[in-house]
Image 1: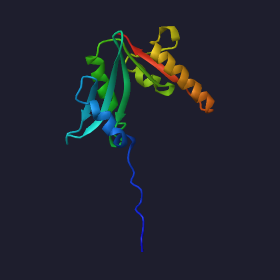
Image 2: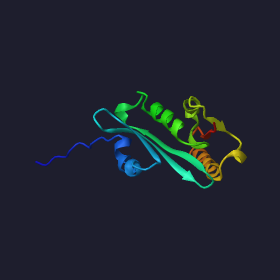
Image 3: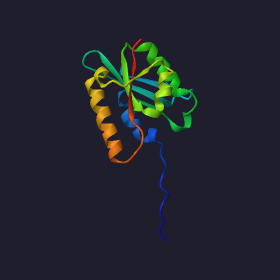
Length: 142
């Protein structure tokens, strides 16, 4: 009699790891590695015209979350990457990024055009879907 296998569960990190790690060797990515040699976290950056750098993703393997991996990675990035360093995050994460001396930029005229557009569209679609929350734009300038 035939049967079926239970679906395998994957963390979001594992599903996206080939994408996240595709540029790990470059200067636009920083990784955290366990003592066993496994990649457990990654911060990806993107360079834009005009010397603007953006944090585009912070990912930590689910087994390593809430153990300071993202904090350690971001402190390292803060010490290595020239300013200004821009990023966008859900508004609920603003206090986390403020711990790294980033400030929320609320005036659209002070935002790089690509982040101004992203914020506008993201917030529009949230309202359209009836969801609460907003996309916040952050900058680390010093």
